[in-house]
Length: 418
Image (tube, rainbow, N blue to C red; front, side, top):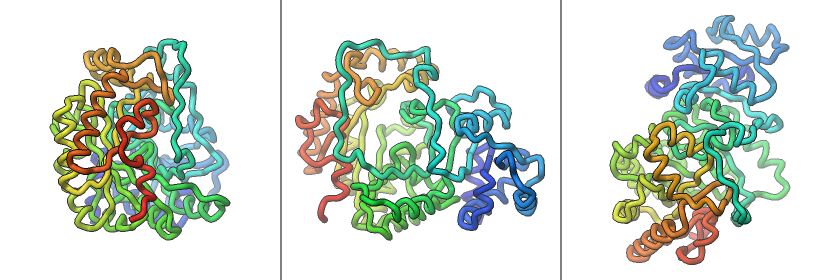
């Protein structure tokens, strides 16, 4: 069956793959069927990245896979320049944030080749934070030594409030690290001191069936962590397939779902490619039936889901379908996020910007005013007490943490005794 590959190619217009992915038997197995389908449906839009000193053996391999010689592109060593080149190859010199994710880069991840991150103020100069006389608020999280496994960079959900594009560059394509399972096994073996927990989903959505049903990178990566009995937190806004949920039946794993609105039409304006709420609730119910440990994260955004009755309905629905822990948070407004919202919805930008506390910063971000956050968290905490569900604020909410939390945070909940 090639339904999954076709479904992914309905979202993806361009494909580029590192030649090292084709040379490795494990990674080639993961991408072979997808490349065969892509080469039939969009043959002119499939390219192969090769080093400048590529060999004839590599050329022969590319031809044996049915890819023409004109699919070969010389790959820069610097990853930032590599991402710039990817879009130029497909005729996009200045792609917008949606067009970026229409290019899929099947990357052979190298831990000694970090992504070059330019200064954020140079990337987005039209929206900058005002100067502050107050000290930047430190975030004291007990789990700073999180083993983060981001198998995808620049996730396919396309949420307009996402802070991840602001940590790098606006020209990032959708990157899948095809060799991540092998990298995880290699890194775990040489760790002298294990991390507290492993985390999937800090800058992406690992359970998105569009990606994992095709490449199975998440499932294979998670199975390695399970093999080493690693406590693991998985964050998702998707409706994972049953195969993924079956894999997550593991006492040291915690699957945290998330959705921020109950109206699918409003939700789609903020989170372009996420499933409607009823599909997420259906996945929560199915996961509970299978015996998966479940949690829920809800972030509050001015002008989107800051209605208190809406927040109460979301929490009660999540609890009804089987959620055992809820963590709260709020918008992290970086300059890149504000610029994106300003471009897409100027009136919404004005509403959000006026609600921000411009005097205090945390994690290079501005948050909604403390008075607003106090109102939101007070209601969330109260509702969770009424329905007897543990509630905690994320550690990034330093000022309000002790006032409203009545349980350990989401990350600490992973390792609680069953």
